[in-house]
Amino acid sequence: MYSVDLSRGQVESFFGTQIIAFFLGVIVMIIASMQHASAYRISARLMFILAIVLLVLVLLIGVTVRGTTGWFRLAGFSFQPVEFAKVVFILFLAWWADKYKRRFYSWHFVVSSALFTFLPMILVFLQPDFGSAIIFASLWFGILIIAKTRLRYLFSVIGVGVGVLVIGWFFLFAPYQKERLLTFIQPEREPLGAGYNVTQSIIAVGAGQWIGRGLGFGSQSQLHFLPEAQTDFIFAVIGEELGFVGAVVVLALYLLLFWRLLRLALLSENDFSSFAILSVVLLFFVQTAINIGATLGLLPVTGVTLPFISAGGSSLLMNFFLIGIVQSLGRSARLQKID
Image 1 (spheres, rainbow, N blue to C red):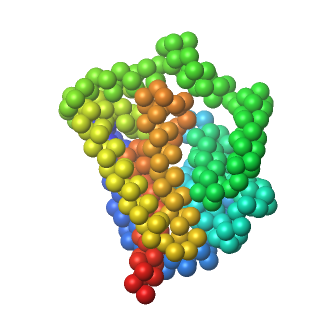
Image 2: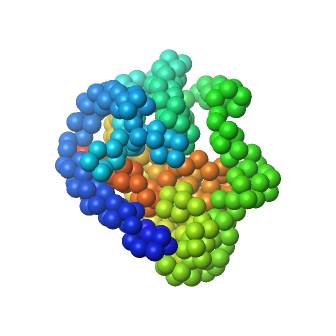
């Protein structure tokens, strides 16, 4: 982030804001980890209602940034409620799955969980925030797979999803969203328009070669050829300035995080903790895959951030909050093993 700020001639807001969010995030993580695991299960419903209220309010009185009405701003600080909604959605889905006592074969479980998913999805889509809508859908579908829902139900969900995409293409998607999808399918159709971002990103990653050009010396990022270098294409900056070696180190750290989370999920002896921790793995994995996939031109650009790395105080705070929740659930699981 400091390197990205250097490209603007001085250390601007990204680095400073991220440092503040980092330290606040650590405090939030510690406080969250100290709570008893049952507190998250008990409060899941109330927090879900609060998240929905915030998503409605942000549409009415929120601040618009780059065409998306998704921020509250007060006294120079901004907060993106959709990041809080992702955390709460994980806890609520885990609570709902636990409530069914492993009767996941029930069609009622699929339909009811779909309705709870559709509510935040439609609210974030109205902002419009297509990337976050995909995250909610991915978390829900992932939970259905983890719960070993019957195959015919999964195929029905896929069929409905395809139908929704077709309807959305003709009636819901904004022109720029359609352009992103068309550019992904045919990148050369508009090399100086919608395809410019991905093209510059791929050039940046390739320019890094083995060991990179060094922090602050990436021509694509430092000379502003790479747009949204602090968020959507932060991995391209890593690839250019730290090279293949730096990119592999970052991916290895993500794999370590996923492995530790999965290990805690396996230790858990109740459905709520297992589903919650596995959903956290899903969230981090999906966001990482979508962000890096877009950077390499393998997936459409949707504005999804790279966990713990992309600029965004709200995202970083909530990521630390999730880690704190996992610590709490994991500690409870370890105590159960000892007992």
